[in-house]
Structures are given as C-alpha cells and as structure tokens.
Length: 157
Ligand code: HEC
Image (tube, rainbow, N blue to C red; front, side, top):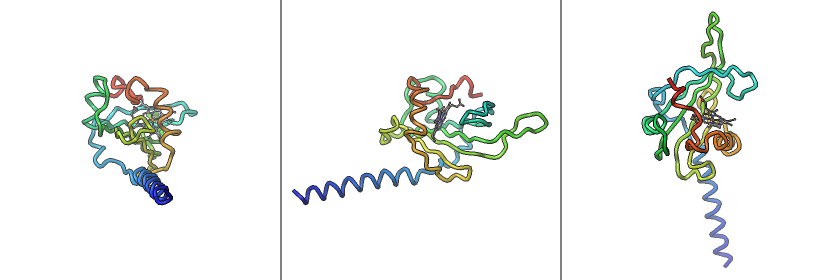
C-alpha cells in the first residue's frame, strides 16, 4: 500500500514538473514576422494595459477561421508585438518594443481553454505571467463565442 502511495506521489510530481517544464520552455515561433500581419493598431487610452501600438500576426492554420469564423484547428497561432508610441512629426509611430504575446491552440492546455497563452519580454524571454489569471480570464470574458480570439478580422487590414 505504502509503495503504491509513493509511486503515485512520484507520478504526480513528475506530471507537475513536466507541466512546469512545458510552460518554461515555450519560445516564440520562428518566422512569425512572415505570417499575415495586421495594420498598425493604436490604443491611446493611457489607463489601458495595452496603451501603445501593436501589430497582430496570424499563421496560416488560423487565418481561414479568423476570416470566416469557427473553431480553430490544433496548432493555430497568433502573436502580437507591442510598442511604445513615438511621435514622429505628429504621426504616431512604433517606438521601443514593450512585450510580445503568443496564443497557440494546444489541447493539453485544459486550464486555459485549449490554448497555450504565453507572455514575453521585448528581448523574447518568457515574462513568467500566470496564463490563467493574467491571460485566459480576460479572453474568456471577452471572446467566449469566438474560440477565445478577441481581435476581429474586419479590423485587421
Ligand atoms: C484585460 C484583458 C486581456 C488580458 C489580461 C490579456 N489579453 Fe490578449 N487580448 C486582449 C484584447 C482586447 C485583444 C485584441 C487586440 C486587438 O483587437 O488588436 C487581445 C488579443 C490577443 C492575441 C491575438 C489573438 C486575439 O485574441 O485577438 C493574443 C495572442 C493575446 N491576446 C495573448 C494574450 C496573452 C498571452 C496574455 C497574457 C500574458 C493576454 N493576451 C492577456 C485582451 C487581453
């Protein structure tokens, strides 16, 4: 009996370690700069978490659903790059990069609705935010009916 309990503990710890490792080694997908790219999006509200200029990138698995609606296939990916607003002769222009966020459809991510959410610093290193509290909850609130994707194709280009 004791042996089984020990074995179960070891298995549970291994599962936790594996999950932590998976989250800890998420990296930005290579080549996302070549995906479908949105026009410049500006959030001027200084109180917003997303104050600044951003560009959304959509990969080719996600794009047909983004355009026409439905459920995203496994592996679909979105990346957003955020920048400060720099005034160039009265024209708002992307200044210093502030952060990058990633969503990847991944059925293993049960706590976050089947999407992997990851936040990165400007240098591309994981910022270590809690994907449930700091990402998923807001996406669930704002985009329950669009498979957790908030932005709209109509505003993309
Ligand atoms: C307070 C609400 C909120 C939180 C918290 C939040 N997001 Fe978002 N997210 C948004 C909004 C609003 C958009 C749409 C932006 C636009 O329309 O250009 C968005 C868009 C995105 C997109 C592009 C796909 C889509 O849904 O349109 C990704 C990727 C993304 N967020 C990842 C993340 C990650 C990763 C985190 C956590 C580090 C996070 N988000 C936290 C509100 C939030």
